[in-house]
Length: 79
Length: 166
Image 1: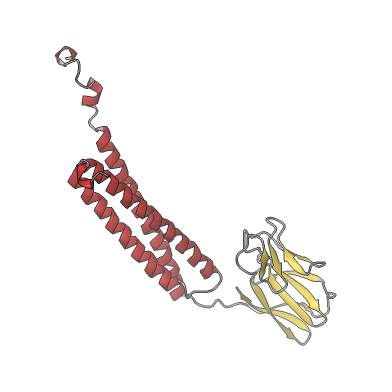
Image 2 (image 1 turned 90 degrees about the vertical axis):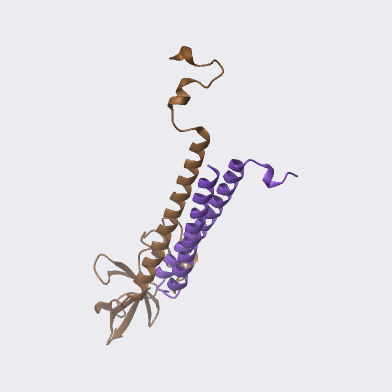
């Protein structure tokens, strides 16, 4: 098995970016599910879920921003 | 100036086209990441909007409206009416000699009008075969929420709609 350092920096950068984008996509799906579930409970007149859902959604957004900054950094380093 | 170029060099159009294929892949991935993060922001804004709506929610005030006289319809009979406005169609069912229930007639799936199936003692939606029990809860089909219930008050033999409970 080849060591990661053997691959050229551009290839490693592309792999890291693809991984980060995949993680963002998965988080986005969780966020979509969260929004639909919260909307369903809101329409059922159950408003207790709104606060925890908003907190979790905000945390996921911050993680996505962090991953995007990681993508930007890797991109500028290997370019 | 083609005669100055070496035969093994890249074609002229590649020189003139300023974006290299490898760089273009980077740009596209960055743009995709940016788009995904903006979508994530949209989801968060949606959740925050629901939170604000929940925090500032006030119980709506419903008017009191006489629907009909108790006993006007037989057991198993149905009366359609509008509440709180005439556009909000509702269905009232006499379930027993002295028992009445009323619900919004809008299916909670896609707002088709539900009807009372007397032989099965339940509400059915003809559009997507959603079924609600006589207490308004979902029995089967795509609806995920029960029918909004119209609270009735029997005042000296007159059934009066007083509020809506989602």
